[in-house]
Image (cartoon, rainbow, N blue to C red):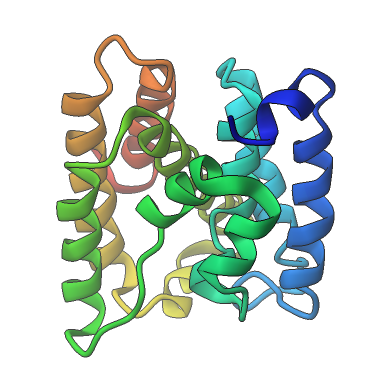
Length: 194
């Protein structure tokens, strides 16, 4: 049995993951801001806790970007957190390829069609938190915020509308289903009807 089972009663892995992610993301900031990157995975974790997800999913939420955006390797992650949590993180890890911004986003959408329920919850929380941050920035700075993003506002509109459709189809009856309605509300607030 994986070691998270013994620790999850006390939330030990959640706190261990927070320290691990803080070290892995040290010196990183959210795109074009002074906000420490660690704030994002902690927002994802908070969202997952509110959805009632169990400790392995919350832990994966904290760690969801370490394989994609840091020097942490799969074997290091598995050594610290076991195969179950590492498997969830791997499902939501998307490495850049030479097919440009739109190609990467299309690959993300295609891959999210097949991830398991736990990874789908992490992905939905991640996308919800990303768009929540964007909406907060737009409220303060206006449409100039879209200049930070490779796809601009039009690309973001396409991507988040596609994500709402995907999550809407896949989340029925799942723990993350209520989050999809909140994500759709944000998409409509920023871009108009889905």
